[in-house]
Amino acid sequence: MLSFDEYREIINSHLTDFIPATDPEAAVLRESMEYSLMVGGKRLRPVLLLAACDFAGGDIDQALPYACCLEYIHTYSLIHDDLPAMDNDDLRRGKPTNHKVYGEDIAVLAGDGLLNTAAEVMTGEVIRHSDDHQAMINHAKAAHEIMSRAGIRGMIGGQTADVKGEYMEATAELVRFIELHKTADLLTAPVRAGLMLAGADDEMLDAFTSYAQAVGVAFQVLDDILDFEGDEKLIGKKVGKDQDLGKCSYVCVHGLDAAKEELHRLTGEARKAVSGYGESASFFTELASKLEIRKY
Image 1 (cartoon, one colour):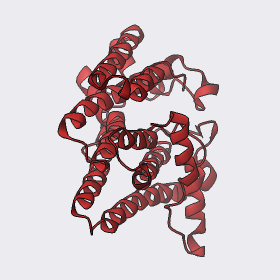
Image 2 (cartoon, one colour):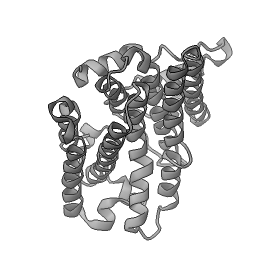
Image 3 (tube, helix red, strand yellow):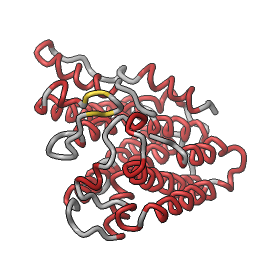
Image 4 (cartoon, rainbow, N blue to C red):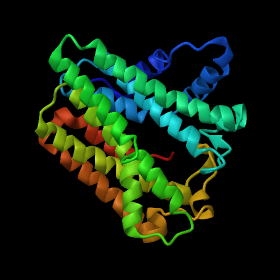
């Protein structure tokens, strides 16, 4: 397997390769899409997809379109999340948010364009492999996994609960729903999709699904912690917005100390989920530990 940085370099080198050319009349649309794609980011989700496929013996070249499509979906969600109707953020990764540069109308369309492009590219990959029945099935499963976990029973459902939960009494149940769907689903999708592309068995899928869900929830818990005590310069946007917006977060319900304990517990749970694969799964166990101490 490669290192995180090596997988990320592959992603960054090919991230815009799958975006269709636009007519001159819509040139600003592609410009807006690429602005948010290339403003930076950890590339965690696409890296997880390539690494999972690689781990299970798959071809990362065939997984690359799906990895890039995941970043398209993640980026569209951030563009929309930053809009005045949602979180109303002026900065993302230290740069002006999409709607601050291109206006709210183009920002909405850029998000739409990224989501639609992801669906177009992945379904195209399924068709491209239609001569090989098993490969076509694997690609179809991966595409469905990504789109369903990004959909109304996944990320969008979690975002809906997050928005509607503002200024409501926060409960542990609501916070858990938001963690699992707003954040964890889009970290579980790449791991499962990468394994599916490689034809992994059910035992591996189950173990790595548990890993990814634990990492995903931990990621959101740490985001909640960083919103209380993070460094704005490192995070690249204003902190304290969860409190300002009355968000339902783990910290609001359980307190800062309990959140840190839960973060550590979830990290241990993630590592344990794939411990049966020993040193061969070290990429994933080490990544879980690194994510626990991230500062942004």
